[in-house]
Image 1 (cartoon, rainbow, N blue to C red):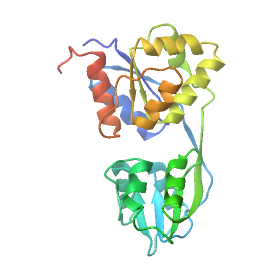
Image 2 (cartoon, rainbow, N blue to C red):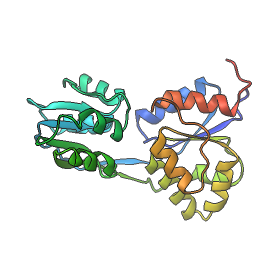
Image 3 (cartoon, rainbow, N blue to C red):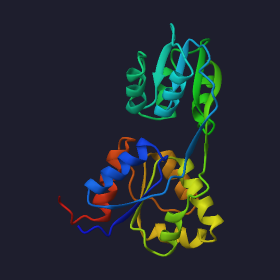
Image 4 (cartoon, rainbow, N blue to C red):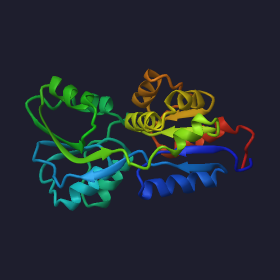
Length: 247
């Protein structure tokens, strides 16, 4: 495969974006790095709870920087990357749901949190599925915002490429990346053309909530990996976009 399969990736401009670019290049694709999320820490630490839920690697790193002590709490992580970050920071991990999602964690905890204080520490764009589901299970839920996720001012070059029909694939890693891509396209006056361009390309979504968000905005999703993992998403999208490539 020649390097003419352009794949947009929207991860924050830190090691996640660098690793994504390296992975796509190793797969023979041409990455278009267009960060759609910028992390703005609040300086908050998770509050005390019988259970404490962390939902992202970023959240773990910020909790550690804020001096959070897990104490006797049952520590819960959504996803192996979050669990790994907790362990690397010196925290024990007690619960990782089989399904790496808010729904998966609610299902894992719903039989044991009635009457318990559950602290959910995450971004300002966390899904209500988690907090509402735990509350419905009888938990006393508190939510602490560890960081805000905003759209970088310079974002949007991938939207212009999509509008020009020059993007072969896109990798959406959260509902917010979808919303920010479309906002950037709107800002540049190319939203309709960008959506058309995506619908002529291969669109990957990291999980069902991201797929639902994209499709509700008229973006057809072609690939959703069985496990919400960026590497699996990238490999599947590259294979879909260039099926003749065999290494």
